[in-house]
Length: 596
Ligand SMILES: Cc1cc2nc3c(=O)[nH]c(=O)nc-3n(C[C@H](O)[C@H](O)[C@H](O)COP(=O)(O)OP(=O)(O)OC[C@H]3O[C@@H](n4cnc5c(N)ncnc54)[C@H](O)[C@@H]3O)c2cc1C
Image 1 (spheres, protein in one colour):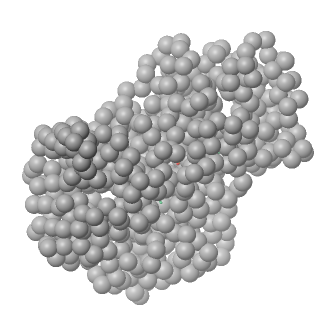
Image 2 (image 1 turned 180 degrees about the vertical axis):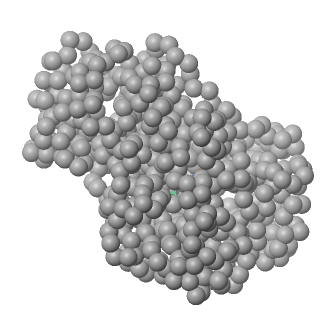
Image 3 (image 1 turned 45 degrees about the horizontal axis):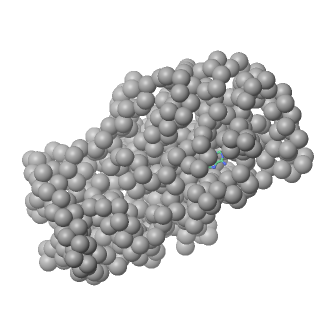
């Protein structure tokens, strides 16, 4: 936080309520000297994980900040302000922050995006090691219904489409293959649920049909959970485990299919997940339409393929993208309660800066926001911001392993079940998915661990060893292969945890501070079907935040268009209407709903 005197000097220096761009001040080292840089502590930011990244060759790879990383301080301190009263500060450089920044800068708003890490992308960030290899914060899939993301990619007019075709995936347990996911969009289209059942029936399934059929009563709850806000909140209070039990899902189906799927889909075991969040996610990713489970992958680092072009777009439109800027606090106007400036520290020099703001978007994730609330009295006195302290975030480990020889794998994407006692895991064959590794002499595997709290204390070597053992269990060809390089990235408390009962504490996008808005995969009330841990959802919330800023500041420009998911198929819509009627009827008679 800025010292009060510095704040008042800044205010006194401005002729109007809003300060011009020329008033962005570097408070050179003042914060560091006085020890007032009291923002979020280091270890939770993806950027900090970079410092823990090491290669198995024993050489610590320096993090090569991409060209996108940072403008030099001089480039913004003296930049002229073009539009008075339309300065927007966006905190957080993931999908949500970039969604807001790109749209607002293209509509003529004076945008500054501040990101704590030197690299853009947040949980989708990536960079090159000193030896020029790309590494990423884990592998990210793009699902069939990520319409807004696909539209963004088209709009960026990239030299080539940055994503693969939809791929098949394998599901494994330590005994072998459990089942596989086909590419549904290449198969004849059938009504949803019937399509998925018919097209997976001929595939290999280690799970007997009678176990799979025990999921049917659970599927009926899908029609009910969105029947009303009240129904949704009831499902949110119970864990997915309780719901599966209540619906009679078999133990085997739970242990071998549902639990591992949720560990990699929502990064937590069903006993620690909100049943409502699970229903939403399964509905969106697997059940609403036959093709919903189809997924494709980036053909290289998302940061290079998608975020770097976004940085260039924002800059071309006059906006600023500042890396290594840790936002530490904000100042509000005592009369209006509005935010007037945002304070940030340069993490490489310790210098502090104050950015005048007419509107503010927080797009920082749960842990980052909790640190800001704890450090900022103006936020701590607001009930909606304090509620965020009730939320939780999850640990993830991302690895990349280079082998001395090529080993082909049956599937490019693989979900591992029961390989770790408490963590979920996946591995991806990058030779099959990413251009850079297509002709590499040796195999390159990206493997991620979710809900990885019990693995975080292990050494990098021990984690890589586990990856090698797991991959070799599925693909025995890896047994004789030697690891020639590897990287392990740790992301403690970095990912949204949709825990039971968390819904009331998640923020809406508009906040109690009139010119401050929230974005990110964890905000609620977003009128879009994408749910759960999703780049699409994060991006859409950024667009919605941009629209809210435009409504607040006025001054023209086009609202961001948000493409909705495909409507429910008629039989699903009818089932929902029936569930809603059943619930209303039961409520009117004072009897319990047939579901909950
Ligand atoms: C291993 C892994 C696999 C995943 N797989 C998929 C997948 O297959 N498909 C999919 O769609 N999604 C996937 N996700 C989820 C997806 O990555 C996230 O939902 C999405 O990236 C969240 O974006 P966001 O903008 O909301 O937040 P984030 O990406 O978390 O961005 C928040 C940013 O805010 C910054 N920040 C925090 N505090 C401050 C501060 N005080 N000052 C300045 N900056 C700050 C952080 O450094 C961070 O860059 C995966 C995530 C992980 C970790």
